[in-house]
Structures are given as structure tokens and as C-alpha cells.
Length: 428
Image 1 (cartoon, rainbow, N blue to C red):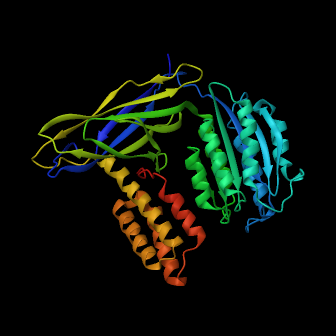
Image 2 (cartoon, rainbow, N blue to C red):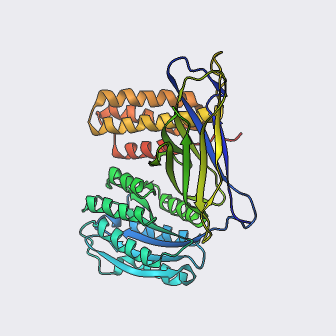
Image 3 (spheres, one colour):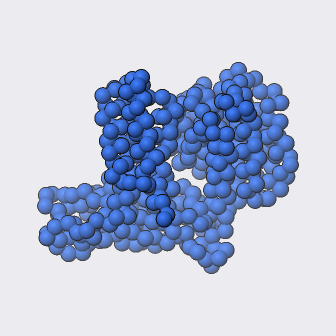
């Protein structure tokens, strides 16, 4: 039996009353991999690890262990998550970049670990950060080793601002065109968050913030990312949306496992395509559609047809087939709110507020920073325990602003990192 993706969908309200020409609404879409034993077999991985070995990577940050040593340990431990026939190549960069290990099967684990352990002994000039050169080398190697049914991924780690920013963006676009995704890891406070986020967005990848003051943070993040990659089973997943006449789909956002706006293309009229990237065999993902609904007479209506297509291994592309998205109109007034959909909308609103907060901080608009931070704090308190970290960080922004007139880079990064994560309700 082939692997399947099941779709569940629910509207923000069970019915809607549109008194004007149109009204805003939301739909929550859940994609759930099938539970068929052995159906969703993890695909092979073709990985490249690109590590910064510049001079700042030798700082210890009060932990007594250099950043580089912590990253080396984290990478070696994370490799244990991979399968023997997965492959890994290793690139080191600083002022220049070197390919230290061409694609090598994980079965030769000792060889890979030896290169990672000795990464600071190769002829890389530590006086600079040319991440673009490292990315280019890795992309070339991964492309050479790419084959059908295998996921190609480049994992890049840096702790500083890089030269060649525009070059990095062009390389990320080249990677996206070749269906190669990037994972970007920023260590400490001196890397450029706007660039890292751009590269992740362009390549439909992910970014992480590693807090250097927490000795075990690098290992946690490396293991989390490698576990996710090792469980990848559905590749090049796309959501096709065909709204009915006068229905507008304004935005598509992923809300689990993290919050991010997805790029949506319109290959033909009333046919929208959102690229969802790679999905795991054992983890559901969730998406919120922002809708504009026109006035209608009372009754139940199909507002859009949706379909999810995907690749599993080397099989031909598969599809869920079209599934209707429906809503009931009633002039009597809005129906009850679905609490699950409302929870995700709350988290999206905090995410959007955080984007506004980052802009206000960048423009040094203290009054606006204070206003938005208070709004995040208030929203977080209304959401309760599941938004405790976001509320705490908003309070920290206000404390730093009142104490010294500025928000520290560390608090900014922690706030941004927290805002994009969907936080589950604590279990009792």
C-alpha cells in the first residue's frame, strides 16, 4: 500500500453572517500522514554540513567550552539519528571555504566523525566569514549526489555576519530551483537575523537560533533538526486551492510545527498553489487560510476545492484528490467559534505583532516598541499558560526599554524565536 496524507478541515465559525459586501473568515487545514505500517517509509537523505570555523567560533561564552567544540559534539551526536545509506558531505568556511569530505555514506560514520572532530585543523583562514563560498561548495556537492526519491538538504551554521549577502540570496534561490532546501543555524548574537530568515524563506527551509550561554542548546537543536530530516517521507508537497467565484484566499500560513507565511503562486485563474516542502512520516502539520467571503443567501456552500499532491520515494506523484471546503451562511448571526482554530489565530496574531515589534526596534521608535510590546503582553496573558514564554519575553522588552532605552539583541532574538513557535497547552 502506498503512503497517504489525510486532510481534516474546519472553519473558524460553524456558520457566518455576512452583513456587508464581504466578511473575513479563517479555515484550519490539518495534514495527517497515514498510519499504515511501513507505508510512509523515510526517504534517503543527501546532506551537506556547512560549518563556520572563523576566529569567533573559539569563544567560550562563559561555558568553559568553545563554540566550535560544542557544535562539533552536537553534530557528531546528531549523526546517530541518520540511516546507514544516507550520505553526508562536510564544508568548512571562514575567510575561504574548503570541501573537507565529499558525499560519504553514514555507514562510514567513523570517517565523517573524524573530519568533524578535526575541522579546525584544515587550511581554512579564520580571518573572515564567507558563508556564500561555503554554501556554493555544499550546493555543488549535494547536486552531484542527488537522485530520485532522496531528500537533498544543506545545513549551514554561522556565528557572524557574512560577506557576499546578495550572493547568499542568489545561491538560496538556486537551491530552491533545484528542490534543495536549506537549514540555517545562527549561533550567538552577531549573525544577521534578517539574512538568515531570508535564506530560509527563499529556499523553503528553516532557521534556528542557538543561545550560546546554554551549553546544551547546540546539541538539542542539531538533534531536533536531524531527527526531523530522518523522518522525512513526503517530498515536494503542494496544496492546490481552487476558490469559487467571488471567494478570495488572501494568505496561507503554516501554524504547526512553526508559524510562517507560505509563498502562493497562481498558475491559472482561481487556482492557487502553496508549496509545503517536505513532511514527516509521523507528524501532522497545520495551516490557516485567510479568507474573504461574499454575501450569500442562507444555506451551505462549497467555498473552495482543495487538493494535496506529493512524492513518496520514486513512485509517480500522488494526490489526495479534490476535497471541498464548506461553510454555512445564516442571516441570524455568526455561529459559535471553533476553539482550536481560534487558538492558532491567536498565535498568528502574536507572530504578526512580533514582526511589527522587530520593525519598531530597527527604526529605534521607542514609543512604538513600547506600544507593541504591551499589546503582545496583553494578548499573551489572555492566551494563558501556553503563551507564558511569549508574555515573559514581552515583559522583558518593556523592562529593558525602561531601564536603558534599548532592547538587547539577545531578547530580540529570543522573542522572535518564541513568536514563531506553536506552543501546545500544558498537560495536567
